[in-house]
Image 1 (tube, one colour):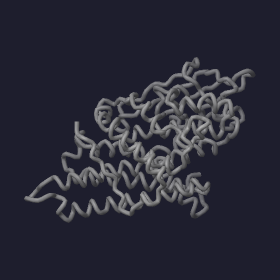
Image 2 (cartoon, helix red, strand yellow; image 1 turned 90 degrees about the horizontal axis):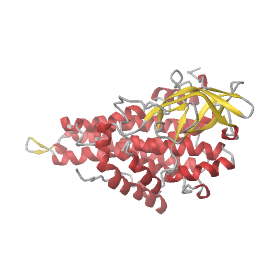
Image 3 (tube, helix red, strand yellow; image 1 turned 180 degrees about the vertical axis):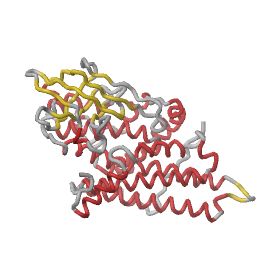
Image 4 (cartoon, one colour; image 1 turned 120 degrees about the vertical axis):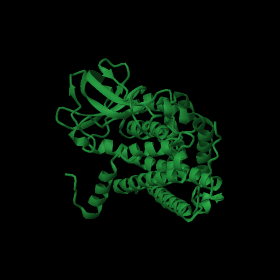
Length: 392
């Protein structure tokens, strides 16, 4: 087992923009990844198994709902601290970051923002501690980029709701204790419901044969006449804007997380280029290798600045959905390109499990698609600047 020698690049002294609390939170997450994730993640990815042993550690570093108030079990941190935690976790693995993102932004966030006080007290502390794990049901087999077309529905049966339908590509679903599910009522209005494992007619089959996010558990949510207590309806927001608000929070975390994956690929390539000797000297001395490395650190630095500024805007309550969309698209695209260039620096060794690069590259092929595809995010920016929607 190779030691984790990662050194984070900070070409523009971005640490100067962070508070001491930010750096303390980030460093704690970084050390945890080095100690508890790096030694096991390659084997977990090879075996296509989510390492459940890390759930407790994720909770301990505040990765579950870090911005949720302390009275509900969260850490009460700001948005930049949340982003930095996601950055460090994805430096370890995108699948592990997905687990934390889903728990924080797609399960705890809607319960906190849209739920009743009773729901907050019942679920949030257990989610923050990792005692409960959650998942988020929006995407359907026939409705991905067009969530408004969902067919999952619920009917009012007097003392309960009856839920029917299916969701697909759901992170955490195979082991989740609860699911925040979005479905249409009899009038076609979208609402969120909390579905608990063990409810009759609710099943979560796992998705196998993935070449990406192999250390993350992905599955389906199947609802066959599931009786949902009326108190499990999220009462404080309905309509498509409710799940999209959750996606804003998740996309913000991804914009930071992707930087972590890029940083790991760059750091690996830089170290390898200094050690690998060809034609009698390290390959780092060759112009084409320096070009690759120089472009990598430039793009990472630009993404870091984009994410930091977005974090400031989020803290001030000023960040728009379109701004978040831009950062998600740009930073994931950047990370995927960095991974591909880093792989070339390592040559044939870059495709082996001895190094993290190919795993990051495969993971990022999912990250560039989920929470809004690269193309849809381009159209979101296009609509924002022209005022004309191209996807209606």
